[in-house]
Length: 256
Image 1 (spheres, rainbow, N blue to C red):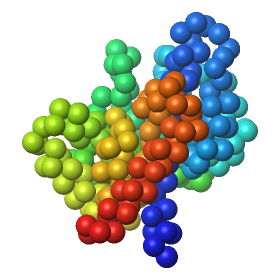
Image 2 (tube, rainbow, N blue to C red):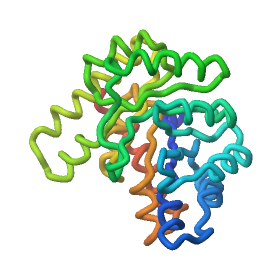
Image 3 (cartoon, rainbow, N blue to C red):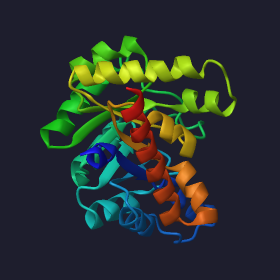
């Protein structure tokens, strides 16, 4: 029973930066599709890929191939646009996570403003849910956003952990405050029937810490795993991340 409890958290591996490396030399390798296959063989529960408007890493062909080759495993990250909604409706990934997107950003910066984008997000979520796609919004652990999330009727919310990870890196004394924000936010999501996920900036240590939060059921990690794989290989890097998740769940059993 205890071992099963330790496994009640899933890992989604983001393979965007395999495509970044491929595109740096305008080659057809390394293949994000091959990376997805290896990640799943190595213990990933799903594959996350962000199809950006500017196609800076993942492209349409990558998304189609991953969806075709690994049915029920693709979590498509996408902006709240008609173009991306049409692609999602065409390929029907098992999950879509709507994220904020700016052309000038290096990576996603913060969570969605659900309140001010309510009128755009509500019909998009309805259309995705109507064709059986799991719906997620990428948001900051900000209580003011909760009511809109409930009204939109999303299945999941992925909590932006970028601030937490930066505070941890800098050994900042505000870390405990940020962690408690995430923990409390996750509990509120859970109590209202929304599954809590977490992602952005996670490494081995912060993965272990976030995994102590009982209500968080899925982590999505990309850049750190791909960076580690340069030195240790993808299989070993995923194994070590999953070890951190299991260790975090073990600490949860002792702490809470």
